[in-house]
Image (tube, rainbow, N blue to C red; front, top):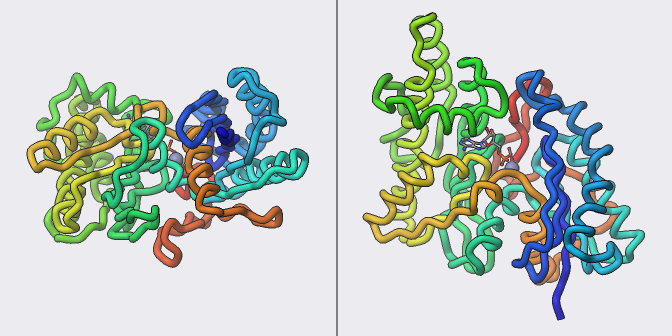
Amino acid sequence: MSVLVLGIETSCDETGVALVEDGRRVRSNVLADQQTLHARYGGVVPEVASRAHVDLLHPAVEQACALGGVRLGDVDAIAVTLGPGLAGSLLVGVAAAKAYALALDRPLVGVNHLVAHVYANVLEHGPLPLPALVFVVSGGHTSLLVMDERGGFRMLGQTIDDAAGEAYDKVARVLGLGYPGGPVIDELARTGDPAAVRFPRALLEDGSDDFSLSGLKTAVARHVRTAGPAVHPADVAASFQEAVVDVQVSKVLGAAKREGLDTVLLAGGVAANSRLRARLGEAADGLGVRVLVPSPALCTDNGAMVACAGSFALERGERTPLDARADPNLQIVPGVGRRAPRHPKRRSRGGGG
Ligand code: KG4
Ligand code: ZN
């Protein structure tokens, strides 16, 4: 008998709803994109995001059912992102998921957003070859972890300041490229020279598994200011991206080697970056390490990854009580993590997954 899970994702500015069968087969994956709403502010405005989730969520559920060719009553369980993310946004998804669970009399399973990003690999590649090294790079996180055979996590390192996606978004803003910055920089960098400007590579050789991107971001801003009208945006984009990717590739493969792991699971919105995918893949090949990464559309926030992670949690017997609360600071490994900033307003993505 197949198991059909409804996945709800509202941790930041994407209203994602999906139906996934048996943790693997995507019946439908609806994304109600809020980017045009936030673009004029140059970043996600939390109040605008949560209000939009309220408007968009139920229609997205109806659309997911229609596209999947099922009735809501056919759903066997509801999976929802409990955190981390923006408090108001999470709240909308969690409240709705509880209402569906109650009305349909189906189990509820709360999912960690970063874990859901990792499970997007299952949708793409099938059962995960575990243990594996996990690298989650998103708008709110840069985390290097080991995932064990039972799906548990051990944190190796993370960013000590800006997350990867946050840095892309901030640099894009400095270059006047709009929001979200990652895809635009990725595209623009194709026409630039990655060796044009030598930007700093923080913590590259310190032997740690931690990351730091605020110095790089400041160096780019300084360069753009100094260059003035002579600035070459494509060269700056390519040089910035190269500095980010150099450190990422070196740290990820260094950790894989040290931990004796021959599989890397890449995940999160920044895993859509073409340069990171290409360079990590090439470098890993030379070392006999396999890199698995979801297709770009499954790297960025979506409901299917939540449904998938929820399916696995259900199979392990996990259930979330109806009085569970959204947790903006939910940790992937309890006690180890970066807390959401205290003043989330007008930042690019921070605090999100
Ligand atoms: O995982 P995600 O969709 O949302 C969060 O959980 O935060 O990640 C969004 C982040 C944004 O900062 C966006 O600029 C970045 O992922 N991103 C990219 C690319 N596509 C999205 N960064 C670099 N290159 C890309 N192609
Ligand atoms: Zn995310």
